Structures are given as C-alpha cells and as structure tokens.
Amino acid sequence: MTNSMTIYEALDLETTIEALAEQTGGEISEEDFALLIQAQTTELSKIENVCKYIKHLEYFAEACKAEKARLNEKQKAAENRIESIKRFLNPFIQQKGKFDAGVFKLSDRKSEAVEVLNLDAIPAEYKITKIEVSADKTAIKNAIKSGIIIAGAELHEHHNTQIK
Image: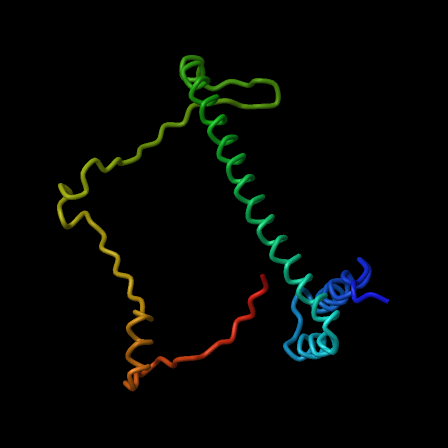
C-alpha cells in the first residue's frame, strides 16, 4: 500500500475542525486544537493532511481577499453611477420642484460643505491637531536585546511554521 492519501482522508481534518468550530460559535479552544493536532501528528501522512488543510485555508483566505477587492470595486462603480444619474436629474428636479414619480417623491435639498484649498493658509484657531502615539517596537526590541529593561514591554520569541 502506498503512502498517498485519498481525498477523503485529506478532507477528514477539515471536517473535524469545521464541526468543532460550528459547535463553539466559530472558535476552537487551545486545548481542543492541541489535542486535534497531537492526534494528527502521529504519522507523517497525517502531518501531510494538516499541511494540506493549512494550504487550503491560506488559498481560501486569499480568495476572500480578492473577492472583497472585486466587490469593493463593483460597489464604487455602482456608487459613481448613482451620483452621475443624480447629477443628470438634479437640474430637472430643481426646475420642476417637489413632485411624485410613481412611487417615488423627488425634491431638491440644498446642502453646504467647506472645501479646504490650502491647509497651510488656514488660521490656527480653525485647525485640529491630532497626535497619535505609538511604540517604536524596533527600538524597544533592540534595547531589550542589548540588556536594557523597558517598562511596559517584553520580548517574546515565537516559532512560526512555514509550509512551502
């Protein structure tokens, strides 16, 4: 018998994880994951299943990201068409005033908006200053590595699995 697995064996881990996640509202506890991975790492063929599942999830996440980008583009195009049509209708609505068009009521609403042409020319009392403070993690890491104790920060070492 060869060491290759069937499609059913490859899907077994995914099915198990998805069933566990469904029972717990999408999250799987660290303990359950540890037990599941421990059971899957008893043989090299089972480790291959884990790697295939990880790759499947990576491809799925990339597909989701691409689909979000595609949908964002479609949304923006639809919003641009809406604005174009409204701009085309607006002079007619302004001329006609408030009226009904079937089940729709059309009217013109006036609004005002400030457009800042040159921020540097705006007087200080009309400016808002936002200050965002964040930690310089690279400098903190280098300081801790050189033996300096930084209050409020710790250096953690992680082991990241790479699957190529």
